[in-house]
Amino acid sequence: MARMMEQKGFFNCYPEHRTLWLEMDLREYLGGYGEILKLATIYHIGSLATEENNRYGLKSKPANYRIDFGPKAGGMRAGRVCRVKVNDEIRLSLHVKTHHAGGSKSESKASAAPNLREVFGYVVLHLIDMGPFPHFFGPPEGYSPKWALYIATEEIENLELMYNLQEPRLIGAITDRVAMGIHLLNCIFLFGDVHDKNCGLKDGRPVIFDIVAREDIGERHCRS
Image 1 (tube, rainbow, N blue to C red):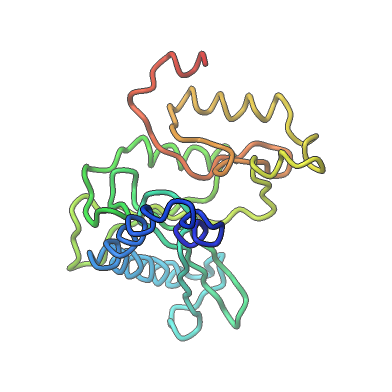
Image 2: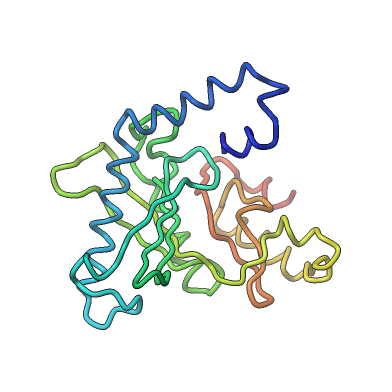
């Protein structure tokens, strides 16, 4: 996020915010949380590779695949984008983050235990074919950040973000059915913070790929 803001010239207009955003990124690394998240992801991928005939085509020896990490696109949760390659071919792309009450970029430690409705929401969205395949895992043995739980979602191919659907060439793809589908999911599962950059369209159906389980929305939200 800080990099994008720098590129767009945001800090030229609001220089006082530059130090704040840089401090948030630094705390994530200096607090050690980002490194533990990466190590936990490596261990999880290793466990996937030990599964015989796994759908990713990974072999149990780490030398047979390479893991690359990149910055998370946005949001306040600590996280990384992870790509697993075999012979330079991407076999698995994961968007890894902490649970909603987990460590943020401004704090390295979690503030509360995971909300199981957040976990349930990711599982249900995948089962009804309206969300990505989710992975859940904790820190490696010997590393025990309090309340640590990592959520990794597989990248959705051919996804059109709702944000991009506002473009003239795609405006016809937004239908009442798609909008109502996303709104209905929000009402049933009390998702929060669903916006035009974490939901979209996949093969003509609505998809939500990043959620927050809220407990304070209530009936009023579903009537809005």
